[in-house]
Amino acid sequence: MTDDEPNERRTADRDFDVDLDDVLEDEEDDEEGGLFDDLLSGEPIFENKEVLRPSYTPHELPHRNEQINNMATILVAALRGETPSNILIYGKTGTGKTASAKYVSQELENTSRKYDVPCEVEYINCEVTDTQYRVLAQLANTFIEQNRDYARGRIRDIESLIEDAEDDPSALAETEFESVRDAERRLEDLERDLEEMEEVPMTGWPTDRVYSVFFEAVDYVERVAVIMLDEIDKLVEKSGDDTLYNLSRMNSELDNSRVSIIGISNDLKFTDFLDPRVKSSLGEEEIVFPPYDANQLRDILQHRSKDAFKADALSEDVIPLCAAFAAQEHGDARRALDLLRTAGELAERDQSDVVTEEHVRRAQDKIELDRVVEVVRTLPTQSKLVLFAIMMLEKHGVHNINTGEVYNIYKTLCDEIDADVLTQRRVTDLISELDMLGIVNAVVVSKGRYGRTKEINLSVPIDETEAVLQADSRLGDIENVTPFVQARFDN
Ligand SMILES: Nc1ncnc2c1ncn2[C@@H]1O[C@H](COP(=O)(O)OP(=O)(O)OP(=O)(O)O)[C@@H](O)[C@H]1O
View (cartoon, rainbow, N blue to C red):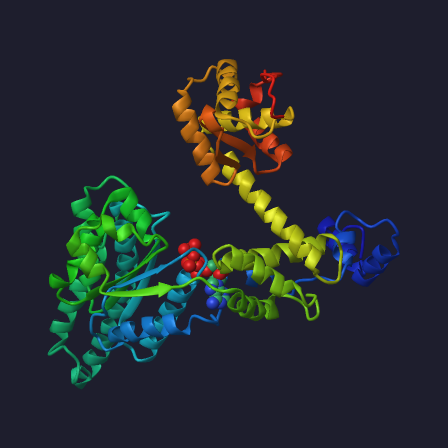
């Protein structure tokens, strides 16, 4: 290389001279590891942690065969071009409702492609999409997108058919077109359709208009559309049963397509709020997902852990313990998987080669604490003030606190931060709510001729509770309020 060669060229050559192996060796010799070296050096515990996350759809769902077969038996009608009955799926949280329904839909769509039967499943999470407008708009736009693809595909086919027919008119034999002109007319129709297919904006239109665009989009081609409404109770709670009413009576007006609904809910009572017509149409078939017991959870964890962990990374008692803990919590598979993943992460952090029972116990505490922190963090300000009062009393050594004591300090705290003071009766209600959330424990005790009173104790760790309460921008201003506690003979 000469001096007058361009600079970049020389720089580039120099870059290539660097031998990557040398760099790696140098790094190995380097005694002081970087920030990540220590963390990387331990044997990894996980083979693929994603497998344990809620977003992962497992290929196998042990102990859900019966429910999966029931769903398939109902939905097979779609593959015969008939309308499947609507299905309502019930069960507590973490019992595999969504995972099973998604698994069945995937299989249904795969088979429909195999046999070339037009059938689609549209999934909507009603916790996120919780108004009639949004549900209809989301569905309309999905179908519009599919219709566009369909129209473009048809346009391509007809264009090439016309080209062939111009050379050889017999190319039109056995097609739906009698002449090239006929095919051209169809082409023009499709192009006009394509232009007219207008997406629904996420707000702003009258709901009637959204509904009619959705209706036309579904009916544009022949198909069976299965609409899966997960957390359907949230939709009804937020915006009533109009959406379900409209969807469930559509079939009588559709010409080309058929609609069937799968509703998923963990609230068994939500149908009580439905119009009787909607209730009977939606609940044509009901499938119940019972909670898992400890043995079933063990099988589920065993299946998932095969792909998630390195061989021998789990000590023998880890899975049974995770299963036992989660079985106590109404047989929730999500909780069991969280526990196993968190235990693995704790083992990884300890740079341990195996996950042990101890990691599971710590994971259980961590998850519980995370839950408490989240519950406390999202409490309304008034409840936070009541909890603050209880926490201060406990900090000053007062146990079996009574409502009057909480109320006195609560009032001082309200003054301190300029908040409205609620009545003692309302504060008693708030204490009961905190009890229901498992943050305090309030028991009614009889004091003989002095009547009955509530004895309140904090049931969550005091330091973490204080930290979360202090992190609230309003409560953070509370300084040095010392609870004035009347002399008590029972302390
Ligand atoms: N039988 C099973 N086999 C393997 N994994 C399962 C099984 N049942 C549930 N799971 C897993 O447990 C987690 C929770 O399941 P899913 O979301 O289906 O519960 P859900 O009943 O819909 O709960 P929610 O009502 O809270 O939405 C998911 O990660 C899912 O993959």
